[in-house]
Length: 414
Ligand code: HAM
Image (tube, rainbow, N blue to C red; front, top):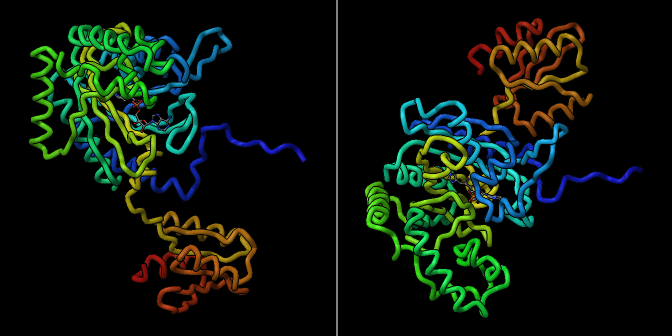
């Protein structure tokens, strides 16, 4: 026997019994987002590598070590998308969406790829629902984005949710803060993990993310960005919070919230669930007012988020789902008459299935019970049909297959 081939590490099959919850989640996302004016967009699974290098940022873990990058047969460097924001911004520029009424509000759903250490809640292929609003700096856009993700997660029943919000300010305040933080880190360099020490110059903010005990101790006394925000940034942030208050969204201001992507300015947020272990972020996002210019478009502000579908499901977020009913189960052997009967029944809007396993009558009834089929039908030797109502127990004889659909199934019975 040949060696068995398995799925690659960090990938998951979505099995039939799991697709219903995903479909329900998708349907709810569509309702929540489209009723707030977001329209669906799909971008390609792969993009030019440079889009993510410039968009997500060279200093991030994603670009440094997590991208699935390859050269195609034409010698171009392509990358499986690790996130959606850069690609949505590329599409906005490429299709001249700055000419549309602003902000342009877009949402997406699909697979994303990161070469991460696989564990529960962290995969190498995972699915995201995301939303991006491009073309407005208004703090209401930020508050609305946070409100929509909170609403979606609450609606689908994700448990133990906490909303964490912070502001990173714009680059000017951040430069000043960065210098202060770097000075603090250098002063305590001997206590830091090697990784954090090596990144003091490149990305000092990520030190807040470390779970290394020495580093955490140093970070507990670190200066906080919120004390460095300029007046405009502080004002913007307080307006976002006031709007969240007005809408009754419960949140925590978390001054050390660090996101794994470089493009953020001003508002950042994450929504966590107590149901998950180490990978507790169900979703996150923020404002990225420089990203579009960074990838060659006209300076355009943006704000958005993405949430991981697998994590939402792990947190108990799946709306109850009813499988479509089976109205008719038709016994074999399957000939043209049986085949036509189910085709006609489906055309008439009914759920119909054939016995495709050559079951005995007993087996047919057992399978019909498993499917919870309403009627079981079989053909008599003379071409007439029997139809047994599994709910009422009644059995009807119909002269032919046409009559089964026409007179019985479409009659008062169903
Ligand atoms: P992110 O925080 O990198 O942000 O990812 C958003 C969500 O995707 C996470 O909270 C998590 O639920 C899920 N996720 C990320 N990586 C994995 C993984 N390896 N396995 C399972 N789930 C994962 C972004 O991607 C930004 N593009 C969000 C954004 C949109 N910011 C502005 N607009």
